[in-house]
Length: 491
Image (cartoon, rainbow, N blue to C red):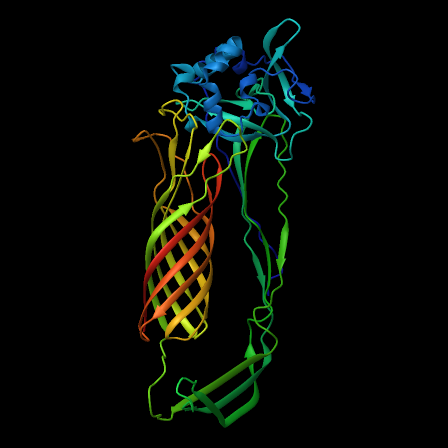
């Protein structure tokens, strides 16, 4: 038996990519090695540097950052501020400045409290635009850090625009060779402590039954089953066991990205975790029940005894439109689209069945966002899924017999897979894409069906399908309302 824990700790050091290929003509990128950072604890927003990029102006997504940067009104209302912002873009590699800036260059990020760097500001008294060397600890921000837009140039150069104030920020240090970005990874081999071999009780129970299927007395009645116990064996014995009650001591693997300077002390304090879940219970039970069924012949027609159903439906689908918390963006519906559905289910009894289904649905809407390449004052057609394929498990309750008319209600849940997402304006496909990812989906369905025989039938369904898919710019919560008609086959 082992009583010692062996710990293996490895640190992988990697120097962060520098921005040496940046022009760095702006004071934002220059640091004085003799200067010490002042502690900045004021609330952001008192001296906005680029007011057209403040969060209070409605800049909440990367698409809106591009919208307000390329809005001519921003240049007219803030000519000096826009000129300084355009020069920063040229410093990080955009040859034509704001004209080369697109959504892919803007990403939402967070600046950690205590980060040292240059912070832009505007002085109303002089007036004057300048930068101060600070340790950033502003009041009123969230626990995750200070939200910011990280703008990255073609060659990898970048800087931050803080959400609250719209000011530029660039982290740095007085000595470029002093600080390094490292990746620290801790891995500790787990220790398993096992007991000595012990005697464990084994309870064995074996039963044999005979089930006799009796015919129904009525024509449409159900058959009955009579079960009789033929023989039962119940005994207790023991066996030698060495794998029970294993104790496992381990530490979860961690990977951290840190900025280490010459005065930094790195302490790794892994937390020991103990898993005392036993490998097996104190006693072991072995139970075997075997039943042999004997059918009794019956006269007359045999009722429907189908166990599986395949349903194929087709029709049209309408979907809702998203509502954004922004008065400058308008949305509207995009009409109806073809829809289809294939379902395979297990029939447990005449009133309940469950299975899996896959649907073909087109999700789209129209908006008037000024995407790059779209015509002004026109609506864009945004396809979130063309098509989107929800794959779901469902359960269906049925009212009515296996033949002729019946009604049903279904509930389903699963995962949706968008096959194609694009934005079309005036028949032209734009370069900007929603970037939709798969997400949870759920549905509710009501329908009626008519079965001509035990095998074949027709069905009409009315569905409501909920989609919760996330995109690069926003999260969508849409409903689709398919109306379909199809065939049913049972076997």
